[in-house]
Image (tube, rainbow, N blue to C red; front, top):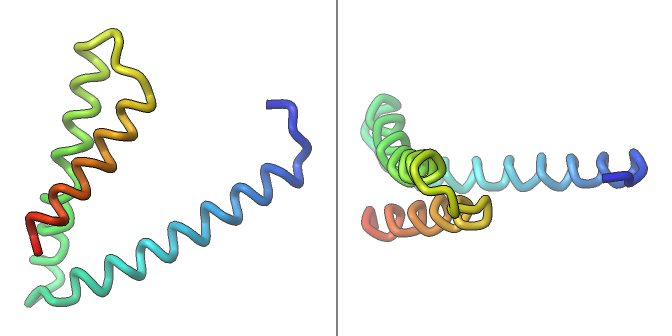
Length: 85
């Protein structure tokens, strides 16, 4: 908080580039599917469980921090990714 607009613009640009790179890497992973429907279903099945766990822990556990939520989503995503290889 309190930084100038140039800082926020730089952060937004970096976040945008990282999002595009991650999206392109996901294309390489999911293009092995037989159809767009199966690729979408696989992606949804891979992303949903860690996010649901983070949301439920956030609701039910008062000491569940934002750092723990990030670790849950990243760790869960990596575990699901490893299980699909």
